[in-house]
Image 1: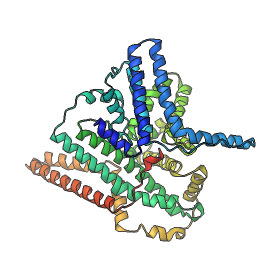
Image 2: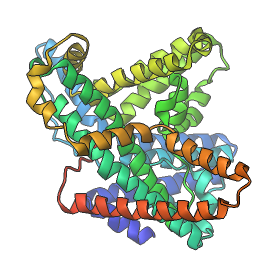
Image 3: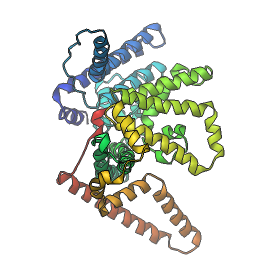
Length: 452
């Protein structure tokens, strides 16, 4: 698995594989030092040094261009010549494996995990290819035992296959189709964007990013199961949330819990008074935004969510509990959807102009030809499936049917299970076939993780 993981990563750029190797050696060394001096000031220094080197890697390779760009803007205001810097290409997966490496050092320092003395076992944890480039972020204490010993069987392996195909279908059949609408809307100059297409674009993007992110997580979880690993769930129907707080309990769970456990709690969490709690939330979501990309748009997106979390913490959550549930859903989806504009737009001015198109009427006729291009059975069917699949309706329907049959007293349950299994098998095969066809025919296949 380690060899396969290295080949997999090197396929995307051999030179950047050495960064990953360096990360492994760095964290192995400082992990051993923390273990040797456990409970002493030397262990704390080793932790600080190890984390600093990890963060230095991500700052250099992910944020150097962003830092120099902003520094040059300041210099320009004083009439100074800009500082030259070569364009640094973002190594794939660095945001994920850096956070995983930090979690290892912290877990060892806290005594939650024993120091890993086997270099190859630690390398496998950081290199593990199923979730290397797109998550979920795996904490060391959750997977340490599995690296040494795993149990696998046909049921688990077949479950992994089904989960992988489900994720592949989410990505190829839903997210990629929604991307066509979103990209058409966001690529238009603002003065050529109608209100109708603006709303279609951001709703499509909201569905695209959910099915893209959760689809990759499903594929990683599925691949992990095939190899005997149990990875944590990463998405839990976030669009059914009734508050921003609940949304972040359901969205990108591995990232939000990482920030909670390794930043929010060490900062004091909610134990040092309300003002400190609000400040901690803002710090966490400032860094959450920055983690997603080296752009002020991402920072604003993070702060936007942080602001609403503070507002809810100040008492708005108690008000929400007393209002009609559909209003709570509407409030949450409105905040999340508007925030996605900043996440998707290329700049602040682009986001502002896009929002202006959404909230000031611009005639449908401006984009009649573009909108008509999506007036087909394929896009309408995909859109309906996407909306329904972002809720728990399929799960609730299946549970309701099963419960009704069990309570009926009629001996149909065994037949129902056989029928349900047959339908599931047909659906899985169909999803795999359609996904393969779409990929082979070079259909539109954006990889939005490259932005992060």
